[in-house]
Image (cartoon, rainbow, N blue to C red; front, side, top):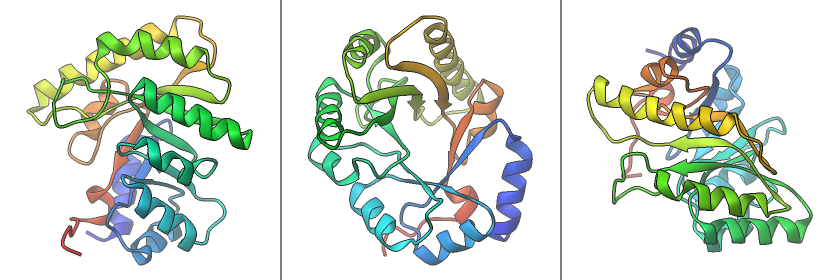
Length: 221
């Protein structure tokens, strides 16, 4: 299918209440231009170096950039004030660095707390049992605002996907009922090309789709 058909089918299936992040990692600017001309404005990148390159060379003022991959502390300074949303706050030390870099520029960072819901060793994100400690630290910040949660679930069948998404939605809802400083549960970012329909069924309101829009990635470029 063409990119136009891909985007139309995805938009039809997610509805108007779910935010669509086009994951453009490894994709050239020409592909992003086509997606932009088809109406997409939110683009997500995994790596800071690629994100910065694209921010500097994709010349559209109304694009919103999302850092969706693991963020190393020494790279925060390169994206401070340039991204709409950091999806991957996953440690106290990263929180301290984001707060420091954004405070130095007198700007506010909008972040999602990344949860490693499957406790996978090869994935970033905090375990649920460490969430309260990170939330408490976020409440003490002046330049970091938490806007919700994000997760990448373990690969599995529909049933296991559903259970992980359901657990995330329960956590999201429980936090939403509480009052915090600097924290609101606005976005539940979960679901990618292979499982976004199940994620939405379980309450996701932000999906991150790459191959479903752009086609297969070529990691050998």
